[in-house]
Image (tube, rainbow over the protein chains, first blue to last red):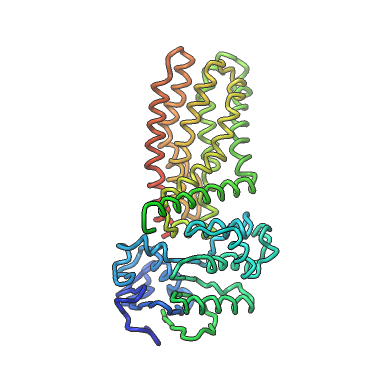
Length: 214
Length: 232
């Protein structure tokens, strides 16, 4: 199942899964799935459409509990350290959590406040870094899909989370956006953070690990 | 997250921020505010037309009519409580927040009540006048609605949270919420009726307040649990 990966169950790893099994609508998505994600690692989850990539990410985040097996956070059962895990996790799903009625600034202000205190200047800074300068105060329904995705990605700049779980973050981004996100992932990993990302896009990132779901 | 004070302030920040966000969305989508209010106004004003201008008859049905219309107008706007958030992924962000979901759900419920319940309460004396309700009952009517409508918002939130993941909901929301709201309706109208009959309504209002206290402390827990099931 694994290529270029650490021992499947490294007890010191940030996040590790043992014997994961998931079945959906009488179809086995994956069984005996073991893997671990250490600090500083970027893992790309690969697999064909419907192979359970999104389901795996949602299971690891705690959004889906329809699985068997165990998930560990620094060696302890994830459920025992749920508070700590929640504070260390940043999840951006393929529905990015951007309300269309609100402006990028209002969206970002809310989604950041759920996790940590962020000043107004930091919010504006992050929006201009992701290329939304000039769009801070226009409603999101007037923005393109890629721009809406950038609103969600601006959270990467502001969140204190160590673990990023990103579901198809590249789909709507243009070439510049892809470069920006790749550099964000790389610098996050260099600072000791970890990333779990699903995408069909060939990533240009050094030390990228792969997890194939078939 | 390490000690009580940081958790306290960060939960407070998330609470305020969620409340502000929901109110902002409601003000930007003006329908959210106008619809329940207009529905309430229209339904109540149809009664004198349908039943006829018999002052005694109208006075008799006034508390019930106003209360039922308030209940239904609250139901009308209920569906939007979590739906947009479910569809755009904001709900997942809410669930994954390190802050207690109880407070975040409570913030959304308070916002829903401020937008759909409060305008109805403010306009209720005018409609009570239209239904020939004696003016000495206005205060009790407003007070009973003030205590009662938040209960409906809190209870309705549980039903919305349970059904938000379903494709076509139809009437299921009303089927779950309305039976739970019956005690509120009974004590709300009884409070106004007893004031009309010259009996002190404080007992009914106290019962209503007890239900409010129970709903305030327990319903957000149930909503939070239901939301976790719905996003699964």
